[in-house]
Amino acid sequence: MRELLIPVKEKNINENKGVDFTFIDLFAGIGGIRKGFESIGGKCIWTSEWNKYAQQTYRENFSMDHDLAGNITEIVPKTVPDHDVLLAGFPCQPFSIAGVSKKNSLGVAHGFACEAQGTLFFDVAKIIREKQPVAFLLENVKNLERHDSGNTFRVIMDVLENDLGYRVYPKVIDAKGFVPQHRERLYLVGFREETTFSWD
Image (tube, rainbow, N blue to C red):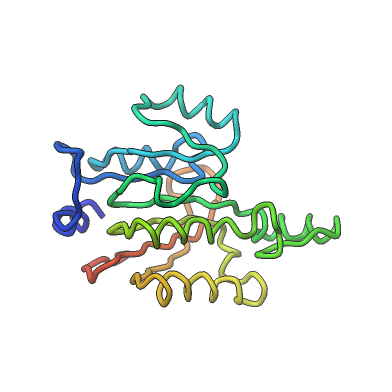
């Protein structure tokens, strides 16, 4: 991805001289996705994570030269700094098999109907619309593709491709080659302009 970002980045105003690209880290957890993007020359310039224990661990793991914002629903998109890449592992509980099963057993709404977590994708979309990053990487559970007979995924793809105008490449990847368990996750890579991106 680094090679795809550097040529396009010249179109962005980038005040962070000496770095290949800048990125923001949404639903940051303890910084797993950030670690990968820093390793290829990126600089994290803004972070959002609501859980106070994850925030504490994140601050221990990374030197912070920027604020760590909390609840994404309270963030005004125009206050987010300009960036080249947006990273977001938005909550999976409303879409995962286990999460949906638990919510059903409790008589609680899931998917987009889950008011606490199900609509957070749309907060990500608001930031993408406002800031127009060169690229994004969104991560969620494999079941997101099948949730609500595929309707949830169709809505997400429609927003990303038709409303926001990005070229989106979805793929389910199993991390079993890197960790001692099957951990299948859906990745959505999107680019604002045509690129030579390929999952190969």
